[in-house]
Length: 374
Image 1 (cartoon, rainbow, N blue to C red):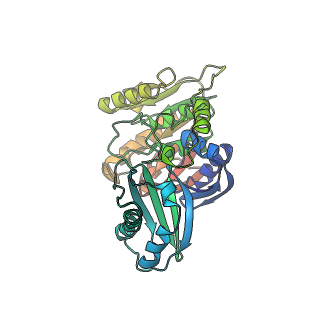
Image 2 (cartoon, rainbow, N blue to C red; image 1 turned 120 degrees about the horizontal axis):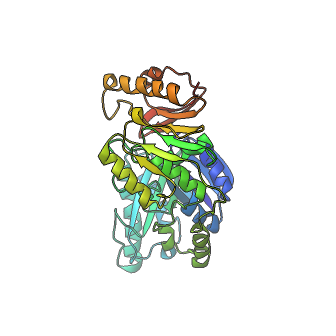
Image 3 (cartoon, one colour; image 1 turned 120 degrees about the vertical axis):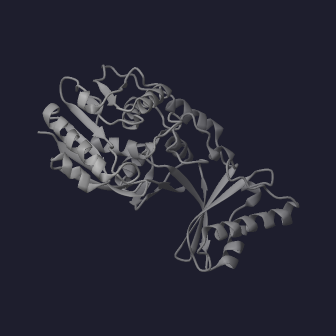
């Protein structure tokens, strides 16, 4: 099958590596997407275990498209609709891209919907219902270069929703992005891991979940179960393997999150419990200035506010200055990774980054910065 993985900008290279590790073939990364090929077992495995992509689309057909009329006819003749969508099943249409006379996604989706419903009425006298929230099948149409590509989405919603974080903060980072950033640190569980501004605890949860093999999608419901070629035996085999957690033959070092806001710290503790990681991750309710790092060296990660969605730059200058002073005073020889969406503020750390990776966090241009603390 030809497939596309949607991924946060800046994580394409790491996402491609992850797909290859899980069995994908002919993997080719492009901006915010990864093109690849896979068999059905691999597709199930990716939905269950891949941590970086937030959507997988399976291509089912493509055809030339020079306007609404050709789109309408192309959709009706594209696939065996009796096989894919009987009237008893509900559906939704998502659209990306644009073409001749098809510049508005809502209008384009309406054309696709009408083509399908008109065909059903003509053939069976009844039609499928539209369900935007919980459809049986989610079709995705992409328009580009006078061509339409019709795909089906394996999931009803973004795969970043793991289920362990019911309440998010004011400016949350998505689980898929956090997983990708932690992968880039190359933390392997052999040294301490500390987040001095941990918020909901997402960096720590994603890092430990990956380390011990907790499958990101093990508790999700997937739309591919409604596809005509769904293979229950293959699915049960992949699900069983995904539910197996690694047995570590060593004790993990200290993994600690520090959060000054009591309400947020309590939410982080709940998130850790929902993830089943309370034996590995400790959340402490205090300011980083009061926090004492565990003995030895390790890795520090954090996503401090940038002044874009919360706070103001002048209110945050002191935070960055004090963070830099704390690290230089207490964390000599530790490694620091910090997500920065404001280079002006990052300068107040008074440290020089040795690695910089551009990426996007919720539409904000950011950098994933690495420092070796002297």
